[in-house]
Length: 239
Image (tube, rainbow, N blue to C red; front, side, top):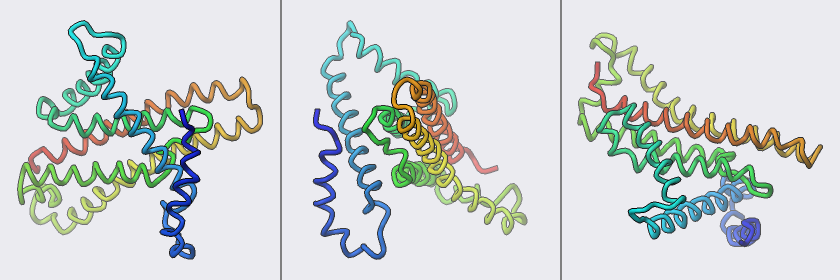
C-alpha cells in the first residue's frame, strides 16, 4: 500500500500555484495541516467505499465473518436511530450512518503511526457539523413548512422578541459545539500520543493508544446522538 504522505508532496505541488495569491492571507485548507486533513479524509472515504463494495459483492444467505460484522455495525446504528426517533428516523439512516462510519474511521486512523486523523483538523469537523446543521433546518422546513419557524418564537407570542434571539444563538452554537468538541478531543489525543512517542517510543504509549480507541468510539457516539437529537427536534411540533 502506498503511504498517504507520498501523495502530500504531489498535492502541495499541485496546489502551490493556487495558494500562492493567499500567501499573505492564508486560508485554513492551504496550510500543511489542512492538506494533510484533506488527503487523509479522501483516504478514509476510499477505504469505506472499497469496504462497501467488497461487502456488497460477498452478500449471501449464509453470511461470512465480514458480513456478520458489518450487519452488527449497521444494526447498532439503526437501533440507536429508531430508539431515539421512532420508525420515522429510518429515513435519516443514510445521513447518520455515513457520518458515524466516516468519523469513527477517521478517529481510528490516527492510532496508526504515521497517519493523521482528519477529525483532528477543525475544517473536517466543521464540515460534518455544518452538514448536520443545514440538514436539521431543511428537514424542519420540509415537514412543517413556514410553521417550522414557530420553534423560534417560544410558547406565547409576547415572548417572541426575547425567544427569537435566544433560539438563534442556541441553533448557531450547535455546529460550533459539534465541531469544537470532536476537534478538541481528537487533536488533544493526537498531541498526547506524539509527546509520548517522542519521550518513550515503545511500550509506554500503548495505554494511551487503548484509551484512544475508547475516545474514538465515544466521540463518534456523542456526535451521532447529538445529530439525532437535533433532527428529532426539527420534526416535533412547535410548543
